[in-house]
Image 1 (cartoon, rainbow, N blue to C red):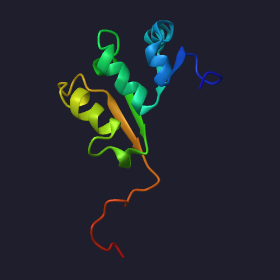
Image 2: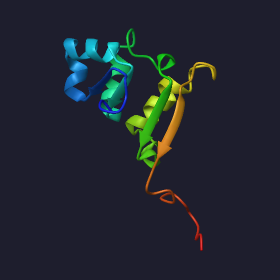
Image 3: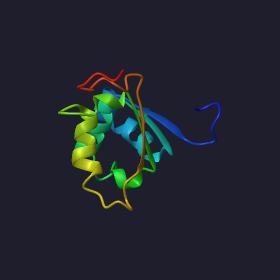
Length: 107
């Protein structure tokens, strides 16, 4: 991304969420690449800086895991769906397992 885009890009991981310097870098970024766990930590503990109404697009890899108590599901339940539709970021869900939860035979 850094090579091909003219934007300030930062990466968040579990340890970055705990570092004040890393959080400042993340807050200045135009694009943040984050694990679902670090994104949830930032939303939970640093909501004065990180909130979904500030986001334009969320790309969810392995989106078929967005159920139950998985971090993805918690993010959508507690931070995304509570926003009015006008303030919600766009979502692109990606999966290589689109039929993982089908209960009946498809063929």
